[in-house]
Image (cartoon, rainbow, N blue to C red; front, side, top):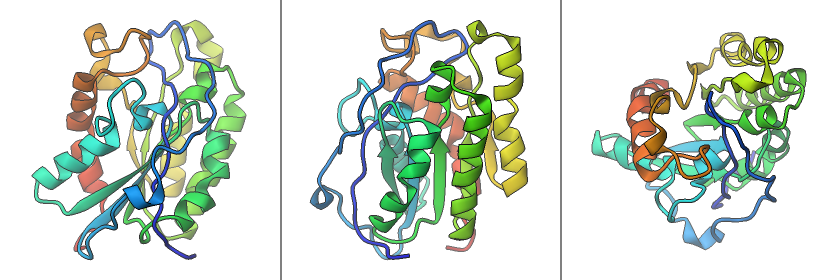
Length: 230
């Protein structure tokens, strides 16, 4: 596979166990031109953040997204890393699967790690958990074939979808992480539960303070998932 420079897109919506509304589906839009993303230094590990609006930074200023703050947090720990934001607003697992080849061929170099946050929009739209599982399985299979390790950020079904739906949806992430040997954060938004002030007015997307808490809560998992000795 050919690795070139590309700056990828923006973000979608998400869920929190207590959400009551979802944003309208958005069409993926480029967040920057290729020239806007400087090539990483030779000694920097490239991390691909493949996700939806939780990665795209919905409702926040440029540079305030989870991937942007994750990069700063890693560098503050002395880890030379460049995080490429491939978050697309409104994206589902199907959309994420369809754009993997496009994203990878546009990368400045092969990523050392892929962090995935997809499936929230599937759940909020009530899509079949079987389809979500199938798509995520295919995504993890693609990255395994490329020899790229994955950190999977899990989601949980909103309570109003019922116990049957949750019983099918919630086990998807731990089961697939085990199947593919991927690292796992069981519930990406766990640190924000019970803290409504850390969500924007839509009650779905984190505020800047919420983003910082998510980064702090997942930083060790990201660091641990990076290949050692690089």
